[in-house]
Image (cartoon, rainbow, N blue to C red; front, top):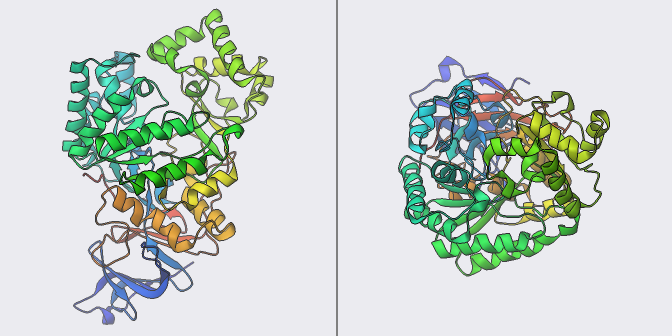
Length: 533
């Protein structure tokens, strides 16, 4: 495809634009219908939207294509890659020009209280100086000087600040400890973090009681920030978990986002209809709550978080490895799993990362157990132990109807729930395909909502929720972060067993007024950076 046309020097006038996008169907991000227009860009900003615009030093003929604001990933873990993989290739190559990182209670800083020399060496191996991660402020001060392939704003992780003050201890904080956590949170907000994320399914975040969460949320409220939560449960007690989160938002007077909203495991399918009504009712009474969602029927997280009871993580990684080396402890954990899951063969679990047994990456647990020569639980315990807990999986536990229900909700935004691939060869395809999949599978093919409405969910809505004042709309004076795609062709191609495939139908991505992606291939130009509150 060769739609880029250099303007003739004779056409260059005093009011020359850096770039003019001609003849496209503009969907401006407000939810309004598409209209035919040209878009002019100058010095990284949109300066004109109208018909018959001439004088671009560079032009794109967008005939037959849709022109939208750049996509905003409402739920990202790319903050872990700011210093190590700043290109953020998998984000920008699916049209994501801005991400919201630091999710699920996890952020690179502040540093764990119990970080030992071995941990410091591991951190150093990833190109990070330990001192940089002492606080969120020191991390952001360093990160803002590193150019990125896609913009990113960052939340402070509640799990991170709890570990910085209390380690992995499973108890309520003392008054002094709570004040230390609040001080770390304030420090992060003062240096540009946009809010806090709770990780209430992961230790030690899950050890926090509701009252502790309210106190932390109140600090964020002082800065008009956001409270975002991986809530306490997404299966059997989903309704109660949503109720708790709404109570935190109500009591603290803040705004909240429920992360990757879903009903997990078959017996819980359909519960999202009830929880979405709870969100509607909360908003009707003036409690501002949103959610985000990814368009896949499989989730992804560590294997230990799924199969090791939360209370057994209180000893940290060292304690967990000690447990798994003890045959009696293994039997107790296995008995717990069998009592909860019965004789489930765990065919719904696909290993995506396992540093101890990389040959098992991409395989389902029953096949791995057959090769490994043990039952499914002893196999899982071996994978965790041999990998020193560096073991992740995809979990096929959701249904299509629930995905469509959440995607269609007017307060649902779109998120990848993913960072970048880095050195990993197998990973959840959402890392590569989330936004093209929503547009191709769920808008064009399944019609869950209109294209203008879905673009709103991907652009102006998250921009407004997260306070990104110059992004999310294709209007004059807004940042020239723009996607141009073919609505009849755009689709994801990444699969669970072949996850590296690029999207189709994404013609251009423009970041900071310059073309950085063509035909879903990144140029390597880092026009993005860390966005501070």
